[in-house]
Length: 195
Image 1 (cartoon, helix red, strand yellow):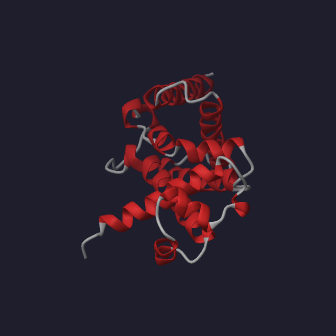
Image 2 (image 1 turned 90 degrees about the vertical axis):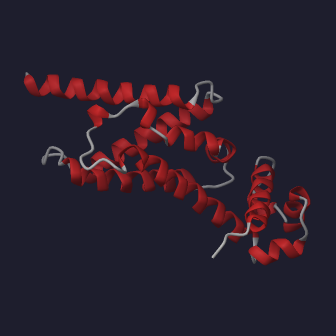
């Protein structure tokens, strides 16, 4: 079945309008009238796609999380054996994802518009990392859940710093930093094991 670009255009306009409004006020005080007015659409178009503002927000959140997952997995989706030591900054796409959704992440990090969403992002990252760890077979003395949490919150910490710093670095510079940190950690761990 062929995708209708007009539907995508309308839905994207509604999502963009919602993000703009969430920059100004709490979600619960945003009305459908405000959303459609800002999106330059009518109420009928809104109701054709969403029964409530909550449904619009839920789809926006699912879009962000879905893109987060695919961006996280991008560097190793075609690689049979993933090796952090061979990770290149150009293959890291998670910061491109954050830049694509910069306004959304800024709202999430700098306000209480979406309480609990930061934890949800970290939970998604933790699950991704945990599934990767089963392939990497880490030290059996280290609890996989704790290691996954450590890595998820560390990665999200980089994102928070980037957002709070006003996105002064480009996505590729953030990827360079991440790869540098991972390489440093790997070298440090190898040196500790040798001693």
